[in-house]
Image (cartoon, rainbow, N blue to C red; front, side):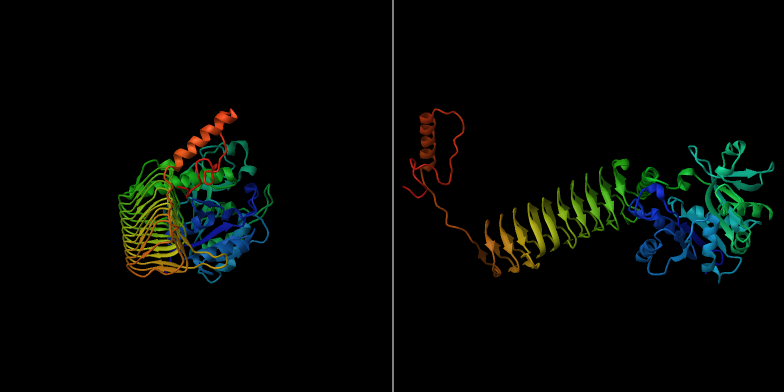
Length: 496
């Protein structure tokens, strides 16, 4: 392991009371990823040797979330059972680092500030390695009044200390340069300096910022300027919405620079874990790409599509308002508008799935078509089979699901019901309006219909009878007549 690869501590033990939530603050999501996962991802991208999360409130839930995402124990955990300040939080994490040598660099991050870039973490690590004081930190200038600690310097610009807002004098509160809350310290200095911290401040807490005064005695910590948006923390849901919007702007900008067209980036929502997205993809307004969705090259995703945890291949045309979740869409698919692919949907190459077609655990093989108004659940549809409008697979008997198999080249006429379990053989035809309950052999025709009856002249006699009735009753309003069993005057169906 690279000796300068940092050890990363993430402070995530706060109560987050201003979120007004039953969930730990760091589990709230922005752009589809939890706050703490954003910070872990940045740390790992910066080459962190180890990552340890310092947890407190709902620590079991947060640990379970980290284990589920990264694997059990991959992200270390330290417990801060009582909230006694940031210095106390880092003290609680020292046992997790007890086997590490003093010259390792420890980067300390905040679990509720998710937009810090990995490049900034690398900058902190490099600055700490070069600092005679063995310490570096990020500073920022907020774009609005914020209760952040101020960086106090001497006339030569040496950083002397950080004074917290609640402890600052009016003159100190006029200082523009504020503490962003991210640090890098040599582990030996961290161990020694944490032991000297005292809670002699307005909050009665152990402040991590007091380490800056200790570093001043060694020549002064290095401060690195960082954009306020990147350092901005989340305290309540107003902050959450603002940071979420900033995260999405960043995500969309990165994809556009990679060759993806967004018609309206401000109205397009791409989650942080989406990718890859191929070059020359076109994305219309109102599109939501969620979870671990990936998109192939030259695919077009039109207005209002919502795609979740789905693999979309090259050259697909997703027409407006199509919804897919946990599905696979093969190359050159023509999908929608208003198609709904539920979990387990698999569409091979050149499949057509049209307006108001719903699939669930359905595999449509190469060139299969279901262009209108169909439901295909627990179904296998062979290559170049054609599914007519109004077709449904009756896959559920109230207790169990059953499979329908439609073999290659089969033709299913409109308004057919295929009662599973059933197989339609290769090249077979099902006549429109049929209810199929038994297997259909290959290259055969299956139909189930009542014989059509035609009563010539019936309509004229019916209209004449109604006119006579209206005149007799003297009413101009509608007359309620059962068209299946009208008055006897014109004769019932079957009369000659």
